[in-house]
Image (cartoon, rainbow over all chains, first blue to last red; front, side, top):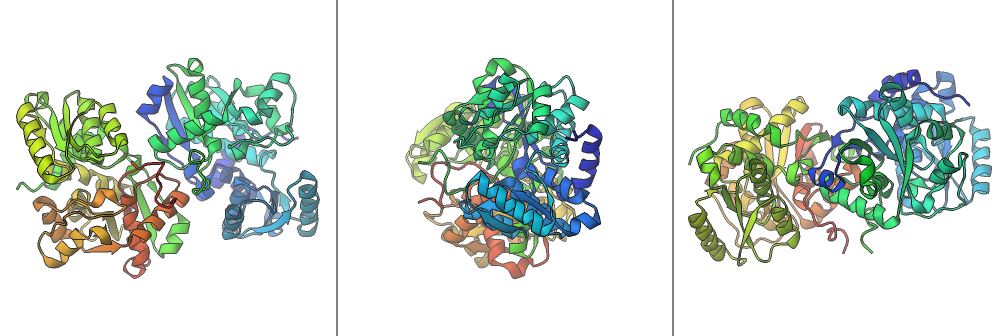
Length: 316
Length: 316
């Protein structure tokens, strides 16, 4: 296990800058009044490929040697990492192999193909995914880029909070949603190095609270099949992300499904942005824990915007 | 009729800067490929009070003498101007009187009240509105700020394209939706002074094409009761906006209701922003007239984001 350093973040930021947006930070007086705090929303939903994941994926793709790059990259993901890796590989002009469950949404498959990725379908089970992925990896020799448990990916995600602390002075805290922990780990990596007085919080759905339970237990606990509207947050921590979460996170706050949906609608209505349910989890946690953030300046990572516009969770 | 000058724009920009956002410009490679052009979306949906209208309203409110300001401001509007004027008056701490049809959406009424405005209801007819407004004006002595046919308002709206040309170099054209013509007039005012080689287009729904027909006829034609999903664009041109439209606009392009809805959904899906049907009209016009903009750099004004999230036009 190689733990990425802040030097890796600096290298990553210079490497990925031509391929990503420096995303804007938005504010809302209305939401600030509700929260009793000053919130600064870092809008990675406005990022290339619609999510922060493009930072880590681009760092992995553009960090490959010419020799390695020829064989391309591979991953398993049915979400934003698949899109982001396909986008980054497309920009470099190298192959990208994605193993996806055949049950994944057609829109996600179309997006991967649109960016130039190649999909190999598996059954929707861990056993099938691992078997199919092993076959793809052996056949292509492509470099495996894990969605989060990869030092290159974490160093890439860390560029997000590096921008945030340049854009907003004097943050008391930063809060991000937690699934596998890639964004939270990157946030810890940057904040612990350049703004160690700023606290880092993670926010998680009650119905997929494996990171919360891991944090309290002191070791990784993985859920079998969590079910939440925040579908980007169903994956478990791994050793590398556990390192950052267990060492640098102040607390993990959990919220209900209804709290997530309410916070999502509030952000759409007031910030006028399209974002995923996963991205609403931090604001839900802030509104539920007003005492924790009262009067403070808080950075809130809006992680992604890839949502089905025909199935909005507040419209039944 | 006092025609605002570019000096008025400079004064306005300094005056309103503390009360408005310098809104970001977003891009999408996907949409660029569809359009065959490089599009730069100026996101006034991310503006204070959710629309560009706050620029003109703030210029009017903060330009009042102390003496005048005491009596407050008044307007008739059921849309973004009502919200914006209430917001600006609230920031200055002066009264804002809004005459609104009793049939206006409750959400809009709530927003006006939330910003501190006072609503006087009228019947949904021009006769009733004018009678009620005359009564309010006489009773309060408040300064009338017309939604668009006011030199202070046009100078304020002109600050939007002033930012745009600072944010994006070498624009071949700028396109904005047209209703009463406030934003288009402001755009003409700025562009004709500081980037005269840049063309200005207006985009309009076919079902509310009074500006298009006025432009072709050479005099103002007002529709009686146009019906379009782009509900911000139903109002007619007036003398001041006609001056700018007739002198500086290159062309007015019209689009169907379905084209507006398709462009709206495309922007939500790809730019990840919440915006009104009215704001989708320019992109619809670009996609319909690819030959006009082929290979060019085009600024596209996204005018506002105040939309009913429970009634999205692509969900029937």
